Image 1 (spheres, rainbow, N blue to C red):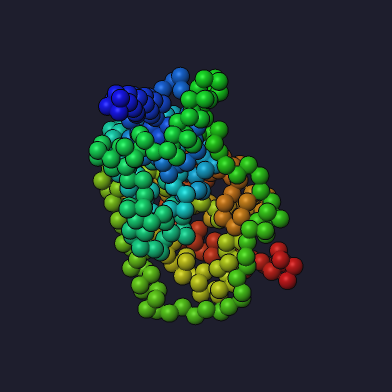
Image 2 (cartoon, rainbow, N blue to C red):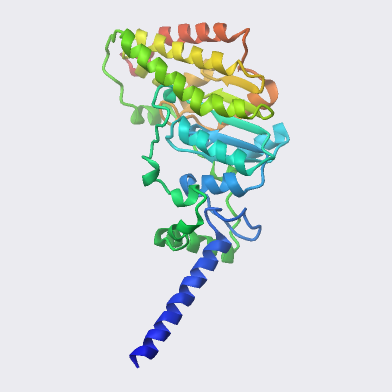
Length: 356
């Protein structure tokens, strides 16, 4: 009797495991095995888990990538202006390395990739070249990002994935819910001064003096970070068009720097000058900066906090890069851009915003 029940239990167990494995492979909520199936209602729930599958398995010839600054970027608008089929890979809070690693993956798996639109955040200019916001690869879902099929059990039989992703996708599909798109998951619909003030903690007023040794170390970190995680990929793909842009951080961001002292702001522009000069060396790079869109950066209706802007600003950015070509930096105009921006942000009356 015990032997009979053992056989029955084993048969039921392995049958159940087989069914779960098949369902995970077919519905594949993280796109780990294949591109989206037209009859499945997918949900964009967590980009950390889906970016790798999107980059490896989707059909596209353009990719929009960067930090949370890209969450408002419309793939439909990009496709309309650039004549592309695009995807978006957003890495929340990440530095340059994770974004670049994913670009390398995209190039390895997609020989048709011809356009990269990459947001480069000035906040990550100075950090270790191998900085990873969410810890080392030991703490990351490497079973999704590597090429080792033997660890796919971490995906196929992950209870959290089954509960939070597989079953909801199956339910959505049965109910006929339209699948999510990149545009349906666009963030930051509305902003406002009260919202920004609530999220912002103004630093105490200081007059920090720049230390030359510290500046030298920061510049060395900047150079390695930029060369390793931006320039190297541009050089490796000379036939690919790279559109790189600096996002328009709001005036509260600049206030946070000015509160530390004007020398901090001066140094930040020195860092930016280095990055601009390096990027402008390459013919396959188009560089834009929206930091000098003063009518945007000083209007807090465009922001949800000190740096994150609303979707209408993202729409303006795409239109500028794909239509009007305003705010493009060249070897002829970048010095004027830097001087104009520096003068504005170092003389702006920030205290008036806070009633001081």
